Image (cartoon, rainbow, N blue to C red):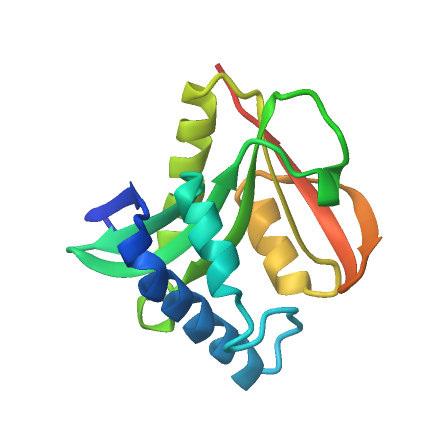
Length: 167
């Protein structure tokens, strides 16, 4: 069941602990369930997130004013996608707090990012995930993303996904 009270806002520097907390909770949940992941509790760089927040790339999803999820939306991603025309938004670190799992919040965050990318004149929304995690790959495919191939990067094999944004 989707949450009807979801609001997404750009993270401010004061939100860095909230964002890192959400990611740590999600990483712990994955580890506890032995789900393949490159995410490790405590493994997210505070400095990197402060820089990305400063660039306006980090978002917090709120349910009834409680931080329930987070994600990064940026306009380029050469490490995974190479040099491309500026026609896409790129999602990273999409995470929902375990207490909010199963409510459709991740899907709502993706829809919000799609609308934001579309309003910025983008034609595609792209993301990547661990190629060996069939569960998350199925999730993105059910959300309308198409597998565009795999790449090998320093942390392992990643699957690339793309969704065309309709008019």
